[in-house]
Image (cartoon, rainbow, N blue to C red; front, top):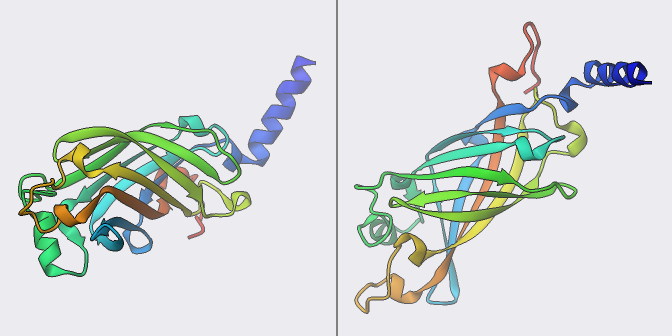
Length: 207
């Protein structure tokens, strides 16, 4: 019986290699975006984005707990389509991009998969302050089409408290923080490009 069971397992691994291998992907900037939202004047939503970033993730659909991700954002690349606000956000009171040029995230765990959704737990570092955050994540690529040799798309978002990262304050003379809500929402839409190690020698990956 054990011989039969092992034989069936070998057949499955050979026939469906994409179901047996974890895949590594790099962030494709041309098909990815990082957007942040905050409430201005306590009611009106303001939106901005980071234009420059890099990262990678390993994703294993069958054993998602073995997956991991890391991301580095160029803080100075922020753009809210408002030069005055951008100058404030780059200043010492907010991201202080001249002293802290990078924002980073490193995952610590992936939650269980429910349909196409799961949670990513990790540590976010802004201005040398590190806090635990949870990203609510949805796979955009149809599950049946996921393969180590094909691109993978997903959407993920988290909400953080500005004060946890020393982003602004409540001083009366600050023209932004005195009018801005405490919560900052971060949303990523990521296109992942398979790395070379996913492709067997001589294969032609589908992009």
